[in-house]
Structure formats: C-alpha cells, structure tokens
Image (tube, rainbow, N blue to C red; front, side, top):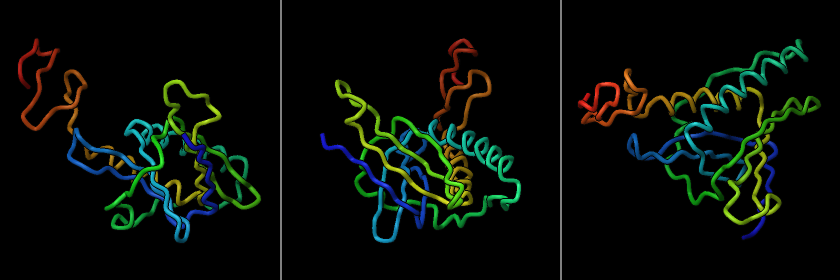
Length: 175
C-alpha cells in the first residue's frame, strides 16, 4: 500500500454528494484545485457529524475573531452535484478541522480508514484548505443530500424501503 499525503491549498471547489438509489447510495467527498481533483469515499454519518463539528468550530472562530465576516451558507446546487466522482483515493476513516488565522482558511483533514493489519502512519491523508464559506456551504449541502435518503420509521427509527418495512415496535407488522 502506498502512502498518500496531499494538500489542496486552497481548493477551488469542494463538495459532497451521493450517487445511487436511497438505501444503496455511495457518498463521496470531492475537492478540486485547478486541474487536480481528489475524490474520497465517505459515510453519510460522517457528513452529518462534520456538519455539527463545522458549525461548532465556526462559532469558536467567530468568538475568537469577532471582526471576521460571517461565513455564508450559499451554494449553487448544480455545482454541488457530482456526476462522475472518478476513482476515489481511499475510504475516509477520520475527519478533522483546523484554522489558519493568518490566511483565514479552514482545513478539512481526511484520514484514510485504517485497513486491517496496517499501522496508522501507513494511512493516507488529504488536507482540503477552504474558505469558511466553502466549508459551511459543503456541510449545508451535505445535510441536504443526507436527508434525501430513505424515510425514517417514526416508530422504530429505522429506514423504510419504498415497499415498507417490518417494524419491531409494531410487533413485526409491515408498516
């Protein structure tokens, strides 16, 4: 396994999207810097957790640097879709955030899921350097994509297929 370490500093575009039908979707994180494009596999729950983390981190940054303008949530939906993610470099195991106050850039650090039997230093890492607004738009779009999945059963909290599902709270009756 080759060690991958990349910095897209700064990204010209960053997005997350899902490809496939609800219940069978594959989620991607994609960043671009000029002619360089990096695609990573990511889990839906990682996008959801990232959204919470970004909002908390932005609040901390705004508290520490009160003169900074508020980060925008604006995005153009057509630009956020991923039609062809290409071959992903790796599956994300861990995400982290940082901030460079001198350049007013946030960094989203994506670390490769540690494959069985490998040491942590062998895993890949990609750092996406983004404006605060790029990262906030990414997570707002990501939450919208995550919410487009299968509806959740109000009784048991499990995803429902279009034909319904056997709900344990309804004693196994189809809901």
